[in-house]
Structures are given as C-alpha cells and as structure tokens.
Image (cartoon, rainbow, N blue to C red):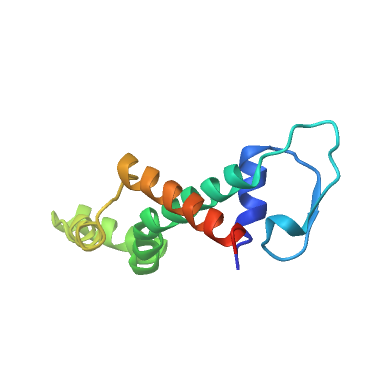
Amino acid sequence: MINYTLQAILELCPGAQLSIEGDEYSNIEWLDVERELPTEEEVVQKIAELKYREEVNEYQRQRADEYPSIQDQQDMQFHDAVNGTTTWKDAIQAIKDKYPKKKMNTKTLNKRKKDALKKLKETNNK
C-alpha cells in the first residue's frame, strides 16, 4: 500500500529526513530541522495530485498486463517479417485501443486539490 503522505512530502521536499507512522500528517516527526517543511495544506494538495496521477496512469498498468511476453512479441515480429504480415502491430494496437492513453486535466486536478483542502478544513473544524 502506498503511503501517500510520505510520497507527497518527498516530492515536495526531496531528501527530507523524517519519521512517520501510518499515513497521517500529525504522525510525522521531522528530523530535518534546517529545512522549511511543507504545510499540511501543501501535503494534502500533493496527495490529491498523486492519486489523480495514479488514476490517469492506470492505462499503463492495464496495457502491461495484456501485452504478450517479449518472447512472444519477437516471435510475432519474426513471422511477420517472413510472411509479410502485421500480426505483432495488430496485437499491440488492439491493446492500445482498448486502453487509450490518458493525460492529466488541469481543471480536474485543480478541483481535486480544492476538494482536498475543503475536506481538510472540515476535518480540522470538528
């Protein structure tokens, strides 16, 4: 399981020295006293970005799961070269068509960050 808080902090503050139990900002022990640390709001927004990025990149994992093995692909390419066919290209294109490439949408990303901040404020006001 991904520790999004840790991952967010390391992206915001590469090389940060810290200790964390669980996935809560409040459970962070900062060991890097000379560095300006990211705020909880910055971390929450970065987590929203990381989760969105993971969703957008899901097509990569889906494709990887369905691509034939490298050996099978090489065999297809050999037979295509010998027979003048396009078996390999057709097989790969079918998978690419099934799982089209996606890109992050700035409006969606900004909304998710805004929603994450709103949720944090609601949680802190309880």
